[in-house]
Length: 249
Ligand code: 13P
Image (cartoon, rainbow, N blue to C red; front, top):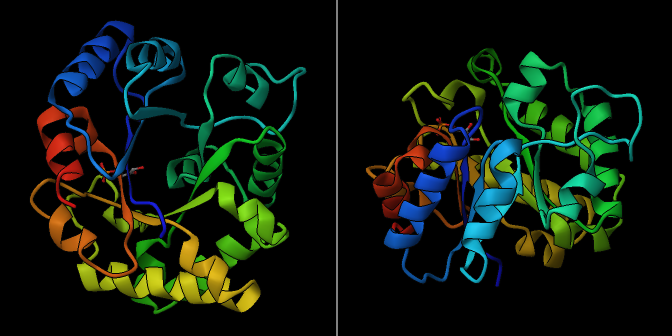
């Protein structure tokens, strides 16, 4: 049985003090669930968040990392640094990193390799832009993003990969992919993985959906057969919304 995951990507929101407040509220409101819950606060709040969450069932992820072990990369954070404060999971390939920081598939493949060398789990994001969808190219784009960054991996590496389909046109826009659009893409991705590896492997890969998921639409999206949870942006900053999304399963 593959895992269900609800992850909150805080992006560049919440300073140290506000992060502690948000995590404390989350601990108060969160009840045990079958679903794995992850939060991804900014780098400056990783340590305080994981300290507060020690002993709870909520995990903490980083939003990004560099591919190098160390060196002259001003402003960057390495896998080893994340591991040194107990962070085991990292989001890679978010569309905002691709768009604003020129992260290419080639660069992402290097980051993926480094994270795996450090036995980290990766939440790998991919998704098409509006123009791609309008021209009917969404599957070609998504297939390319996955192949280029992940298909050099041996089958054994996939136990540390979670996929997150985030159509760029649905991020922060209030416009969600319909549950059918999400299901269609997730099924397509699963098939693509099956063709490259095996049906056993593809049926075990967790594929979550991101893009304007709210407490009001989560249930319908999560009810789809190939949607194993969500990567939540704006609504993860509101504990009531976020816990309602967790409980939507
Ligand atoms: P929103 O939920 O704010 O649309 O953001 C989704 C996202 O980018 C999560 O990584």
